[in-house]
Length: 249
Ligand SMILES: C[S@@+](CC[C@H](N)C(=O)[O-])C[C@H]1O[C@@H](n2cnc3c(N)ncnc32)[C@H](O)[C@@H]1O
Image (tube, rainbow, N blue to C red; front, side, top):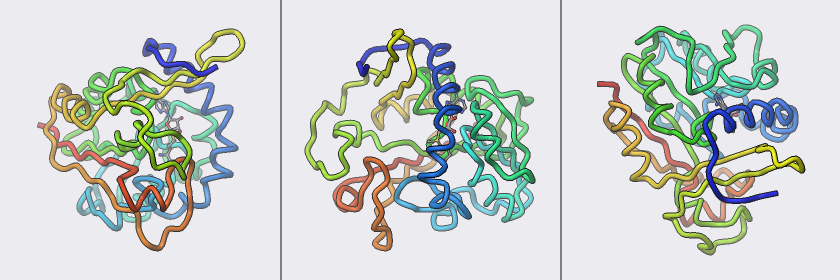
């Protein structure tokens, strides 16, 4: 059952731990190959090697939140960074490389001391699924000395259906109601939260950071693959991903 409404942070986190544990194998069989060997910021296939948002990473300590199987952390590790990969889903973490340090953690409550890392980042992890973005970002800022970087579905995509061939606007960009799926027992099984560009900037500032950069990567000509609702046809016309680079004060 699909509805729009609101959910508590606790029920969202519990639902996502279950959902990602149950769906880890399917997600990784669909996308694992495309994700391997680089730090991708989104379905466009634009990577950290292309954008260099983190600067020189060799020797820096970096935390990934909502890492899934940790392909991004693995790439950073190959570049000489000291990286920890964290996720709420044990099944996603278990699929990661055993050479990586992997920690099971909810993005709301990270088991690390203040200012432990130079950089905390996430590529489509944790944040889209959690109701209170400023609280999550405040927690990420707490454990970070320099930069918090995250990518999410570009807010304009929320005004469109999930059909990658459909180019029409079907919902208001300003509709922030939560996307909620429930099972037959009315239990929340999956949620996603829409925020506008302005909401994301507000969340970063409320979390005590400043916005250094917002990147809207263009769909690269080499990528002819559709990924869920992200497609080359849509990518020619509007962005599918927004990447936020925030400076910890
Ligand atoms: C779309 S996947 C992205 C994973 C990885 N970055 C990638 O590109 O494959 C979203 C990830 O966020 C994780 N996640 C969901 N809710 C979370 C939470 N509350 N805390 C930490 N991770 C969470 C999921 O378990 C899942 O691995």
